[in-house]
Image 1 (spheres, helix red, strand yellow):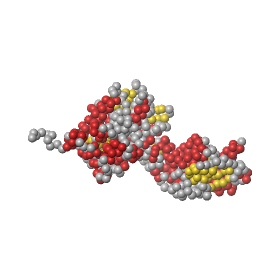
Image 2: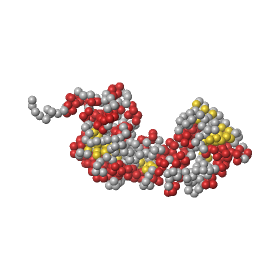
Image 3: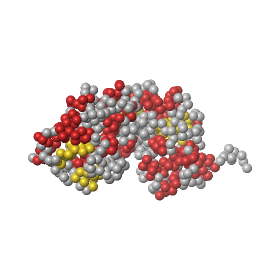
Length: 245
Length: 359
């Protein structure tokens, strides 16, 4: 089977890491392996695809009407059963974490006396709303029988929320990140989508991405990419061999 | 010609001239405001389902409607009402009775701690005093108590800051905890919890109880915010069900009569209390029931419009001048139109959970 690794900007380092894997590792996948960034995550906050017959077409009406979003990837052939789509998007919490709303709101455990408090259920609705179109993408692929894999995103960098956070907000940042990932894990599990988790060795004791695996304020570097790519290939090979058998 | 007090009264004082010979859209003197409510007045609102219309219309007209417990902006808009956000000035859900309002304020100001903390159903925890604000309940008692503590803090802030508090009186019937008289907005077991006749008691509040409760509410509020004014209305929505042994129509008439009389008494006694006749506008014989939907209970968008246009004729004169006063009844007669009100205000009414029980 062919493997397409795509999604948001975290897919870029996975694509670069393709050059670092061995032929033996490549051969885990029976067919061609491609990697391409599809979009920047904020684009996924709006509806970014449509289904036209048997084709899933990427469109972002407000940004680039009816144009391929990135790297010439204009859509996915939903009747092509000889493909696995691995997508990096469902765990990208950066945009959520950077929202200045956390300066004045927090889940009840972290609200303290200075923030508006809300329940875990409300948090879940926030997360599901944030990733609504990403979940729709996985649901659509599932509905058409196209095997897909959800790729975890790197843990947040300590600097990611500096626009609003103070030193004592570390726990809130990590909590929002981890709760969001847990909710998305549950959601993807309900859909029967396998998840490739972030390698544990890339995360420090506080839950942040270790400096040695960071490329910038929120992306993983080539070391992170190589680790993650191998995990993705392994997961995809499981699906591939399952199909073959 | 004989001289007596009726001789020089204006047309509004006579049924024939004021009602029988006047189109309902021209009942202009129905509500002469007692005090100004302008677009800079900080308004808070609570009450039965009907109160949601008032809040929604105040917001739509860009009045300064206080939302002291606002939804986090990231919560999808279509989820706000489901979680009790944006319906009233805080996330208290429907406040149907005067006693419920009084206890809410007493809880907010740390003067009352009900014996019952939560209802547990299948491992989820529900707030007995606002059971529908978390449709799936809280995950733990600790969470419920923390979110409630914040809520009561916001209610306190609402009372301390608001310049006008609008309360729509809905019911006299309620279910209480026998242990300490804590009033529930809904009978235990209807939304959450479990009904137990040994623990729960039905009450139908009397005139003297309701007026005493509302005077206590006024006293608490003005104790911390001496400038706050009150606007009472009576919901024209009949009871969905009565727990008395009376016919639901008779029970409704009792409830509404008591509430109307209490509002009238408070209006007469205090210069900082006004009364707005939403009940009269909808239920008047001259309205011929046209403001009720087929179930003869829910208010039509035209009914809401009729009520709100009388309110804003006093408080938002500029915008009213551009509206056609005949629009209300014309739309009502067609049985359609004014859909914007209905679409914009999807009510959340706990009481209607009882309707599904009717056989």
